Amino acid sequence: MNAYLDYQSSKPIDPRVFEAMMPYFQDKFGNPSSLHQIGDEATKIMEESRQTIANFINAKKEEIIFTSGATESNNLAFFGFAMRNKEKGNHIIISEIEHISILNITKQLVKLGFTISKVPVDQYGRVYLDKIKDRLTDKTILVSIGYANNEVGTIQPISKIGAFCREKNIMFHTDAVAAEGLLTLDVKRDNIDLMTLSSNDIYGPKGIGVLYIKTGIRLNPTIIGGGQEHGKRSGSENIPGIVGMAKAAEIMQKEMDMEIERLLGYRIKLIKNILEKIPRAYLNGHPEERLPNNVNLRFDGIEGESLLLSLNDKQISVSTGSACSSKTLEPSHTLIALGLIHEEAHGSLELTVGRFNTNNDVEAVIKALPEVVDRLRKLSPLYE
Ligand code: PMP
Image (cartoon, rainbow, N blue to C red; front, side, top):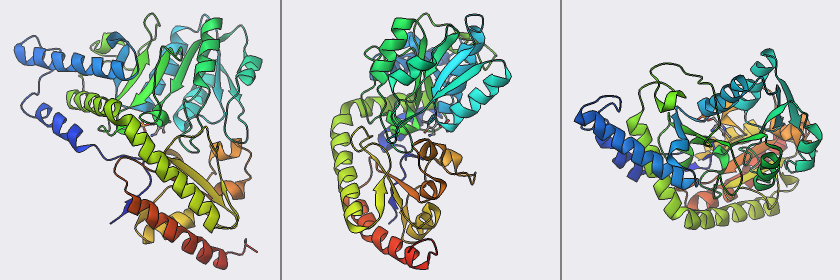
């Protein structure tokens, strides 16, 4: 049996979600734009699903726009908002540790005449409100800070940032993908104007996501066509995906508290045992302000990638960081922003636990990792 501890990269769909989706591939195949009964049924289930997802984040139904996933939601939030509001200002603030999709979107926005300020983070990956304040100009139209970091699991002071942006009348976007199902999301409590969500991160299907857009905020569409989703995102709706995401949100809302408690137990056990058993091993990210499922460690003298492959030989799946950036040889921009040198960043390993892990998976890692680290260090010219 494979011990899978890479839930941040991909999650299996919950069997209850899969079951809920099945009828919408064959029997209930209608298009909400059709005027007949079959189309009406599709509209009905789509709007019910929208309401369920709105409840999950304390939003209104009309504020939920379905997209193909988090990358598209981030594109709609940035390009949609920036292009619509460029007369008001051309300055956007993000952090140095945003997801690669946001970093690449903002590079494009620079070519379109926008100025981007990246706020630094501390050694634990925390963003400080003062650093945002320092960068504010009269041209600032948008602040975007990820709810929690997908690599090191550090949780940001989102409520404080949201309250500040609301006071200054600057729009606040957060990519909440890493936090979904692990922290309670509430767009009203946190004064969030735009929020990116993905279905797979709550054990729903891939290929579906949401952008929450607070009532009254105007965006240009990034996908233009038949005018679906209030004209903000055209294209025939992915009804099986929408039903699946709503079912995933409904299950998550009911079971989240218990699930978090269990995952936190695994996280504490992994960190404690690994740091105790392996010399010169260190935790990356914040010790407390951290997602309950995230363990990110570095080991002197070895490469994260050789660790990953050696664990893979022992049927244990882990990650060296963001799966989205694994095609480059560059060290993680997040770990570098935390102040790690290249060798330290390359020596890092990310373990993320989830719904279907058992204590046996955790035990397997605690047993295998010290052996693997020891063997690789003996072979390493970098380790004295
Ligand atoms: N934002 C964050 C924080 C992510 O971790 C990811 C990847 N899971 C994305 C955005 C992009 O998601 P997707 O590849 O599903 O579009």
